Length: 446
Ligand code: GLN
Image (tube, rainbow, N blue to C red; front, side):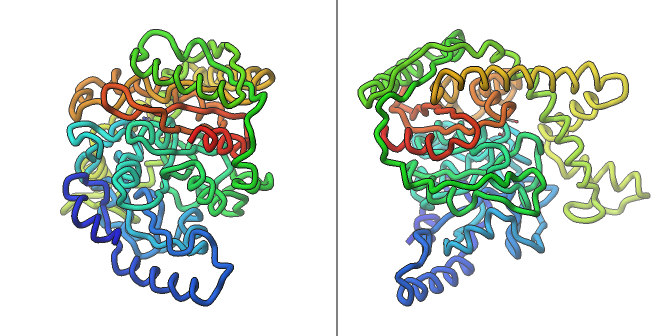
């Protein structure tokens, strides 16, 4: 049923890069047998899902939406996808994204832009835009995404679905093609918080293959999902409701907060004074780490290689020049510059210091409140092409999501109504490793 829906609708949306129909049908058959034979089969057995195309999937093309990897079939499986497979999911395919996860609109894909299912003239958000559009359009039940600076939450917000970026280190990054290693984190995108909880249960937890993966025990993410919210203290950062926030988005968020008050929540105004520094800090740290991570794509070991190289240097230069798209090249240049001798202290080190201030703002806030709420993005989904010539406007789109990654805390986007005819996401941020609480708060609202 899902494969035929994909055939019918994905021509318009472009949410999938690869459809793994043979594998899906074989997995579905195996799931049927397991369900018939075993009453205790996992809740995810037979559930059709899709993976963002930066999770390495053994034997299935994994492109990162780049020409650089348009022939790359990984010889191994990422921890996230292998854990979901072990839970019995059916893998429908790999979803479109911004190239190497760099972008906020899914327009930076070698395989073309993704359309927002609510309005085909609008972007679905990015970089996990294919996953968000596929879930919203019913072309899979749930999907994986990754969030380095908002890439799960912002597309979830633009497409009216639920997305969770877990605490940094909660989910293994093994086999996830790296963008900015100190920020990258994988998480679930689905219709509801409850669906997200089931996926998180499958993928979270220690993995010896990722040295930054935490060994703090996971929780049962559905056990207290229905617990009452009486006395929940909700922090509203005043900086999240200032200039630049669309009025209708602000109204939708304020209405959502009122619902939480009816559910027993108490609102407290707080301050996260370094919000405005998150953009300059992030847009130094992320490109710096990207420039280092992406140096592995040299035309030698895997991926795209230019035609008839004259010598080794020519092969490096042309393979990278022809294989990477414009946004990726721009970030590699920015990052290389920021890390070069004489500039490191002025840029990278300074950005890391700001990062610590941002983290301390959150640590202080969570001494007073249980969760923090605000918008995910300053606007609803914008028109395709509207911001492609204005990188600053595109980067400003990330103002409310970046600090969470810089601090490493978990956060969700939860559907909170509509503004200008398009979905609005409410952002709920929590303290380190408070995923169970976040899912509980989101679930009561749904
Ligand atoms: N929009 C941000 C960027 O372009 C975040 C992307 C992400 O989270 N992968 O870097």
